[in-house]
Length: 142
Image (tube, rainbow, N blue to C red; front, side, top):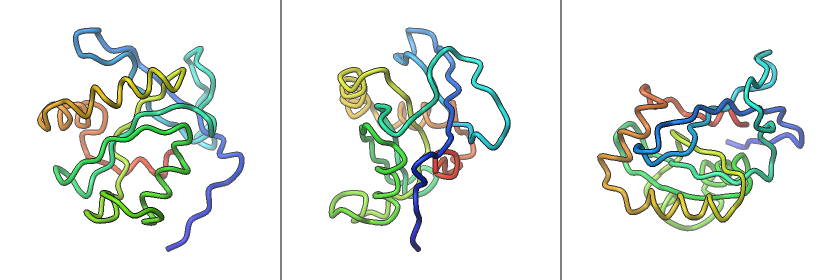
């Protein structure tokens, strides 16, 4: 299966502020531009160089991978197509089930390190809070 990421994906992010005790600054969902929904948040539309923290899964409640990137569509495409050797290729971790957008790479890296230290149960709760059906979010960002 071969996929191409368009140069202008036309993607917008819809973000919600979560209480500080949850340890999350914002929960973001991607809305395809063709959906006709305007971004009601003052945050700029997601672009190719938007720092992001993401969680990939092999299936619902399956193997999880937490990562950070400055280009979410490209990085998820790489995971899905087993472009690089490593954990996600070895364990078939191809579903994007959660992501957060950040203003800068330093905050994204800090958040990734925080999530990697979390217990598995906490990660599952985080995923299910924003994506209870464990829907693959790839189509939303591609």
